[in-house]
Length: 291
Image (cartoon, rainbow, N blue to C red; front, side, top):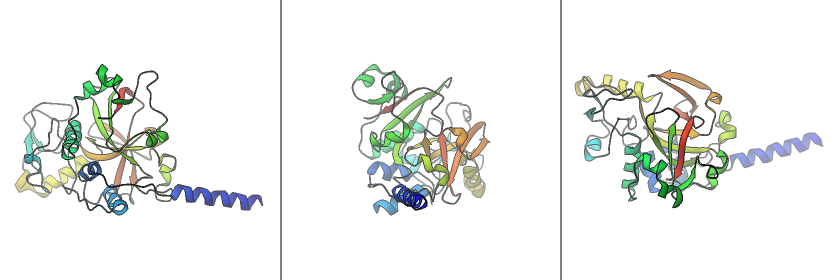
C-alpha cells in the first residue's frame, strides 16, 4: 500500500509539473523576442503556444552597443548588421573604434515600448531613486524596508509582461534594465525537459540587452565570414538574451570567464540555447517598475 501511495503521489506531481500555463500573444513579446537569434527556443515556444509567427530580425540576434539607440539606421540592412563608431569609452568599448551596431540596455527597452505604443520610460537613475515613483505606484517593489519583493517563485502572481526590473550592483558604475516576460513554465518547459531547473520553473524570466558569454564569439564569426563588409570592425560583449532571476549563480551547471566577465548559465534545447543567471544577490538597489 505504501509503495502504491508513493507511485500515485509521484504521478500527481508529474502531472502538475507538466501542466502548461497559458501564454498569450502580446505586442511586447512579439517585439522583444524578435531581437533574439534565429532558432532561439523562446521564439519557437512562443510561436507554438500562441499561434504567433514572429521571426528573428537578425540571424545572430541584436548585439549590445554602448550608447546604442533604435533608429532606422539600425534596421536598414537587417538581417545584416550596421557598424558604428563608439562615442564614449567603457570597460569594453573604446572611443572612436568601430563596432557592430546594436542597442544598450535602455535603448532596447525604449525600443520595445515605443514599438508597442507605450510611453518612454525615464532614466534608470530616476526610475530607481525618484521619490515620486516610489510613492505613486510605479514601484511595485524595491529594496526599501517594507517594499521588498516576495519570494521569487511568487513574483509570477504579481508581475505583468512588460514590467521593468531596474537595478544596480554594489560598487558598479552603471545601472541595468530588463523586461519581464514570464516563467519557464509559461513557455512550456517541464521537469523532463529542464531537470536542472526543476525548482526554478516558476522563477521570473527577463529579456534584456546586456553582457553575454556567447555574443562576442558569435558576432566575431559573423565579421570573419563577411570580411568585405566588416573589415576593421570589432565584436561586442553582449546582446539581447533571456535570463532567469533568483537562482544562486553557484547552482548553475556552467561557469565561464569570457571577455573579463564571469558567467553562470544553463543550456536549453539540447545545448543550443543559453539561459544566463542574472545575479540579484549582490544588488545595492533595485525596483520592479510599472509604467
